[in-house]
Image (cartoon, rainbow, N blue to C red; front, side, top):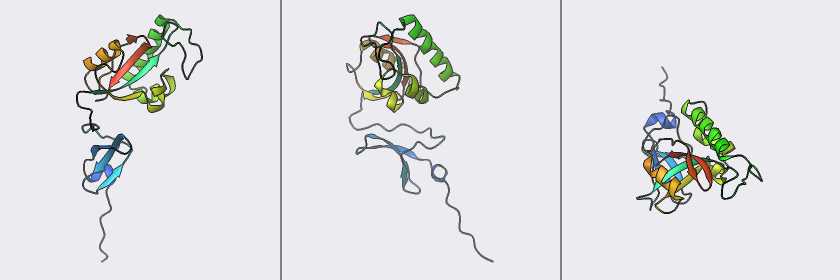
Length: 168
């Protein structure tokens, strides 16, 4: 009778992966201690603690989705050369986006990629780590008031109307 060799388990099932920080690429990666394998993409179902880059103590990390309006300090974006909507219209749009995200209809990063008026849309709205004094006051205050994983109500700054997702 032939003996069977055990089949290798998928990356995320062989042992719980750990999120670590790559200094060379300045982004997180996922390391499996059992197999000594690492991957860049977040494994499905991963819910471990996020890794923090060196020097991030006292800082927060957030993603945002920005909707500009005619009164924004620079009423143009990569999506639209001249933005003419009102602040109330921008608020209504943000409120609709918040409902879609909260209901699970769409993920924050996917929506930010296509709908945010900020250039951070290319990164799913991720702004990276920042500390006190690095963002507009209203934005900073709102971000620090959130718990990790919490989504804000509409936040108003000179840039426009934001939804903020605190990620670390």
